[in-house]
Amino acid sequence: QKVLKDLVLPPTRSRLRTEESGMPSLLSTNGQLPEKPISVHNIFAAPHSSNSPGYSLVHATHKSLGIYVVTLPRRARHVHDFLLEAGLSAVSTISPAVLARSFRMVDLLAEGKIHPGASVHREEVACTLSHRECMAKFLANSELTHAAIFEDDVIFNPRILHNITTLKSKFLRDAASKGAVTPSSLPSLLSSPPLTSTSDSPSFILEVLRRLADTSESAGWDGLNMGRCLDSCGHSELAASKVAFGLVDIEKSCFSLCTHSYILTRKGASILHNYTLPVRDAEDRIRVVLNYKGLFNYYSTAPAIFSQMAPDEQAIHAAGHLEEGLPECANYSAATVCPENVRRWAAAATSLT
Image 1 (cartoon, rainbow, N blue to C red):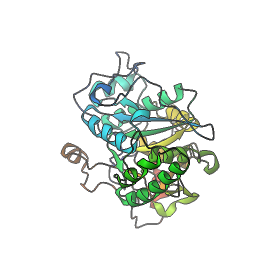
Image 2: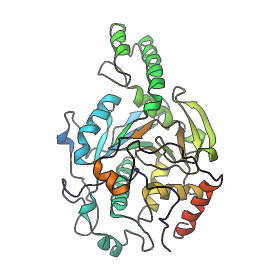
Image 3: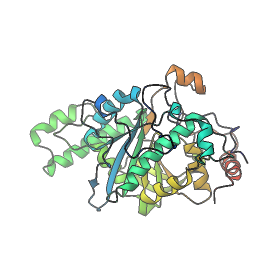
Image 4: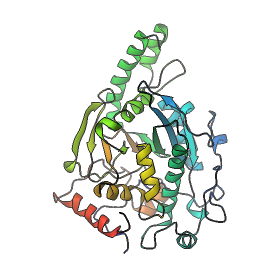
């Protein structure tokens, strides 16, 4: 059976858009991904390594976090600026995106890398392969317990910037009281733009990610979407309240779409890595189905911490997206549209057991 594509929802921007030129193929002649991805770190002013296993941030709870960014060449400058602003430049691994032009769909079908019943676009397959690369890097490093994975069009959710500013100020004052920030530098740090981090200050966003990761066992999630879109928020159930300095709640989501920013546990990465090859559906929809079938506990932060840049003209033309992007919660007229849509997807994905 075909995985249904005629859905109530419009196509989402969560699928990482790929280019027809700009980077050599990331697939070898036998269709396998290479052991070492092609590096794009020379585009950046700061030293990044696409071959490193991920930065290991040791928590007070003895957990560690890897940070990965799926990156197209034309978005490398934005990724550099985003990581610099968030204070994550020195602790992130750039993972070059798999380009849609680097493979033929017929070849992947013949090799069993696309499910014969799947109805997926080439760009959706490229997106899935790109995210699998990050998961493979994460799983290959036994020292890491969690991975935060971003797409290259990620931005901060402008609706919570005021809260971030307020909480970061408190964070810096607490750091100064503990000697992590020199008192003389505190005034300039407090007057700097809300997300700016320097070598003289700890990264507030890094600490937010760490604290979110620390909730996986207590809240019970395998994956945490930090930038959900088009969710049926009325069907969400509170799992944890006021976490990460009180910045967000964590909710059990029914319909958590978009994949531009999320955290995985090792268990969660292993589940997704297992169920996304062969490719059965778009990366975000397969997570919704796995969550519905009880195979993958996928939760969301409320509100979303991250959003996406407005798509470029080519992306708008290709996917029919509007400039204002996608909302975190969708206004569904029927109370059952969320579970009904998920049931339709799950019924189509018969190979998921």
